[in-house]
Amino acid sequence: MSMQLRSTDAGTTQAMAPALEVTDLVVRYGPGGRRATKKPPAVDRVSFTVAPGETVGLVGESGSGKSTIGKVILGLQPASQGSVKYQGREITNASAAERRALGSELRAVFQDPTSSLNPRRDIGSTLIEPLRLRGVDRTEARVRAQDMLERVGLPRSAVDRFPAQFSGGQRQRIAIARALICDPSVVVCDEAVSALDLSTQAQVLNLLADLREERGLSYLFIAHDISVVQFIAQSIVVLYRGQVMESGPTDSVTKSPQHPFTKTLLAASPVPSPSEQARRRAARESLGVRSAGSADATGHGCPFSQRCPLATQICRDERPVLRVIDGAQVACHHA
Image (cartoon, rainbow, N blue to C red; front, side, top):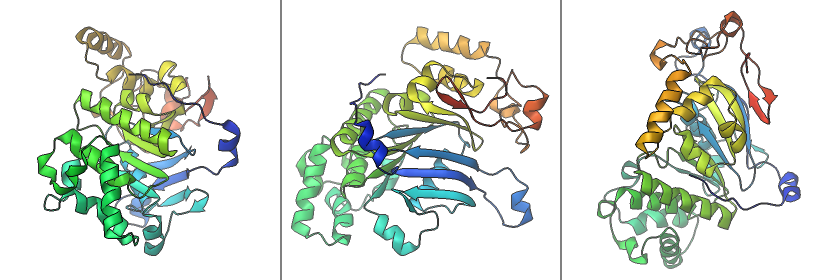
């Protein structure tokens, strides 16, 4: 999939603070104290920024820490170390009152719209609630809900219907409408299209891209499929076992990947063409990357070293630092 992106004014973007800024983020699960610090963290010194109007994709296998990062940004998971800033403001340890104030500016779209929508409430009630909490008159809130439903491709009459009366793709459009009803600046999309079929995925991704251009939104787009992220994101961060393997502009990361794990993700992306799928399968096998089950999270060196065909002793002993290669940052001793 490909998409023509509208150019933005570089001077204006540079003058503005990042919409999101994550710096050296560390997240550890489990009991505190020494026992916790001996285990490899779920997120290990991850840093990236999201500029105003930009989409940054977080991509990786299950267990890579990408959803944990989203939860920290949304205030659903505490950070062990590091910093999260929203438009220059520190929000890492924001209080409950501060989080409520951020509720209209920092929104989320989750993977399963069926579980995220209350089956006993009509769509109008679901969309109106966040507006009512911010003092919007009920009549005005209903009109805004109808306008938003129309904007995401649903009829205005949908306000009086229930989630069970819609398809999966339509429910995800409703979830997007709920996320945007308060005119946020940043939306965290956590596997927002992974439960949809390919044609519906494309429709929802195009909708998200259109809304970004129309409203100047910033997205943190979390997914396991790098081809989906490639479609919508201007920048990509590739994660493996909580660490950044490669990051940079989408074209640099996807067209000239430097890290063996990035190459593995690209070769594993599903495509509708059987012949192309067979070609990718052969390319993936030719890389010589061992299966995920063979990996051992030792906490030392490069976390991908147990699977990587290029690994040497330095990979097992010493964590590689991110260094710039062909426009991207790569954490690999042999890249």
